[in-house]
Image (cartoon, rainbow, N blue to C red):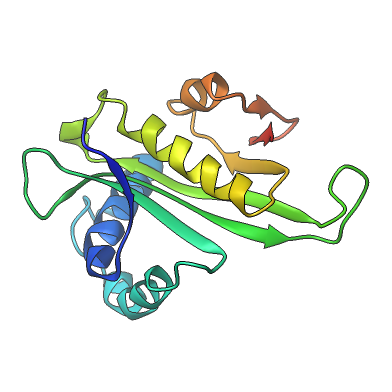
Length: 160
């Protein structure tokens, strides 16, 4: 398996491509079919900037595509969010996973799991005591196998 690595600014276009793969899998009715769409050009400069901040509250982990040089096989992205502290989380630090995607021709190789492991380690290193995400029905078994539990709504949570 290709090693998971932190995404770099030069990965930004591929990160957007894989994000579009995820978006299209959730709501294919927009007709974009995974190709370039108008928002990509506007998003690209901000994404490059965020990917150049290794100590910020945003992290993207990727796996290089083993058969297509220059392409990414998988993407996992999350943020650290601050919420006013409470019992069990006095610092108010929560991780949120908002984008997990694997290129259709690279699925079932463990890339999403490896990326999630890297992202969860990043959350732990930054003091997050729980991680939240919204799971599609297809992805829920992966998250459950990592310890996430369903909540009353589509949100799932992993105590760290």
